[in-house]
Length: 171
Image 1 (cartoon, rainbow, N blue to C red):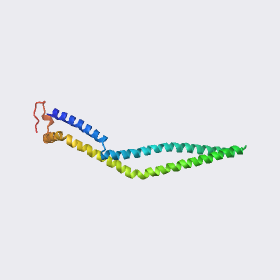
Image 2: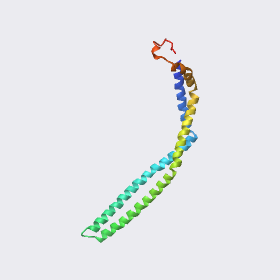
Image 3: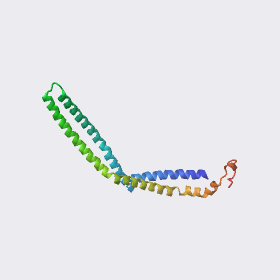
């Protein structure tokens, strides 16, 4: 009896998994919303490349700043070299500030989207859970009914009264 119900449960579980997988591939609302969340996460990830560029620009800016300071502080000053490095320092500063400004702008744009996208993630998750629960309730009805039919007997079960598999359950 239990073995047959266990087989039913396995079959129902396989069906739930198959049905749910099909629903994930469909245009179900949870999936459509989830695509928006994934797009937002991809935007956040792409911002990481900006951090690398920003870090590199900052290294260049700091390097030319140190170089100019060193050249200006040396006893034998080469004005041509100092001026050339001041020009490079100014270019590096402009480049760094430009990348910094663009990065901050993108950060603010992404940050402005956060509440809506967190809400979308929450809604997508619970819509997906609702779909899964609906599949469960439909496919496990026979197994749950069997469990309910045997609930009172199992609640009153006396494990010490069971001697072998042929001994009836005492309640």
